[in-house]
Length: 430
Image (cartoon, rainbow, N blue to C red; front, side):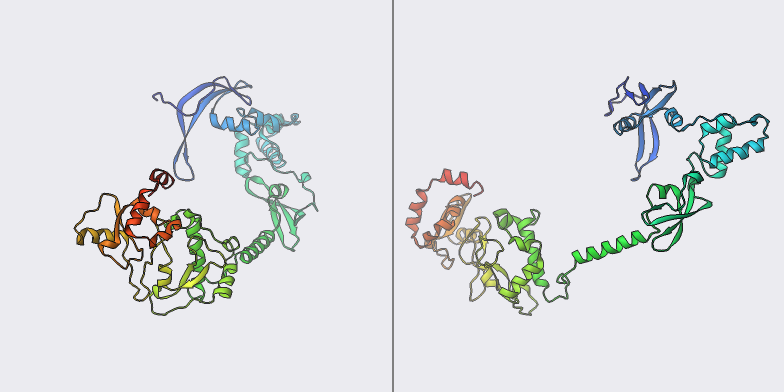
């Protein structure tokens, strides 16, 4: 394989458990597919074990084992740890092949490992493997009868007897009685390690109690259902939280972005908000015309304050439209809708087109048109003033509302006296 640059840096000469890293192997080993279906390749190193054996191991696995406090070896440490000093059985040399196999099976059932079997009976490793495969026990230690105590209780289970049956890999099955009265065969290893605590009733009871708790905690008010008569209150509650606290909401910039908030006790308690609305504001007037604009909607009395007690009301379309702010300025301006006809007033971007079309005068680049009297009722040239966007923003600040009573000439003089460099620094978006 060609030389490659890998992210994993190997330390040749590093001791990991009983293994000494001696050589880096460039050839990767294919380990199959992972849970997501991707191919898994391992980088390996050649290691020298303390017993003298040379083995190949994955470097990252060795490092993880060392951090976990495990001892890595070629396998000798595990065998030596579980091996016991067993003297050779008497008369082994005179036993027939069948007798030796029967003695081997008996020792396997008693929980002896391969090293002990070889030292006691002199049976080859391949023969032991065949017998284990035939018995379905493999290399796992089987509990001895003397290790199992009748009457032992753990959690809800009590051992009442032993069985002759075997579980997977030769695991002993014990008969247990649950506190609920059910008698069931349980694998000894799972009982001893407390991985099984009942016949199954504990899990069902826990799930039942958890479900009751979840249902109680998440008990629905029913107003999210379209058939609910108060669904519109729930939609108001959800909408105001989205606009004030969700940066991904398209209207966040004019609500939460400007510092508007929701009354804290209402944020996570819809029923408290609903109680306030029905108690203080009453039901919303529904025109039943099929058009949402004909119905009343939630309106903030002071648009510079969030959704708080005393600042909410039900309002019709015209009232609420006239209580809005121009988004680019962020301050309340002239009425946007005529109260008698419900027709929208002309906005600045529309005035620009009218100004250039009817008065044959081209506005300077970036300039806009400003109504001197601010109410938009008079579109004559005498009532219109060409201003920059910065001047327009400054005129519509709440601190300058008194200028709507000034004349054209006085407004021009006032604008000349403003420190525009300082204003633009404080308002870079204008």
